[in-house]
Amino acid sequence: MFGDVAVQLLKLMGHSGTVPGAFKAEDIPLALERLQHGIETGSKTSLPDSSGEEDDDEETVSLTQRALPLIDLLKAAEKADCVVMWDRNA
Image (cartoon, rainbow, N blue to C red; front, side, top):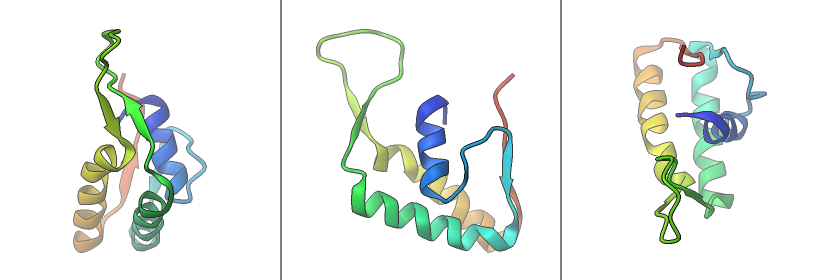
């Protein structure tokens, strides 16, 4: 995840959106629930493809589609009872 999309998803999970950051293992179920609820209730928004190419026929990727890998990661972390951490790619 990159930039504004990542921050938007973090905020849906109830996090401030700061980078770097983390969720403790015990906080992951609530974060996952909030993310899924946020996606279901208000995320019909499409975001431009962040490939860097400008085009009038620019592909759009929904926030729901962008959240799927994060949802899978949170489910795996919940099952394994481990923390989830993030940082900027250096």
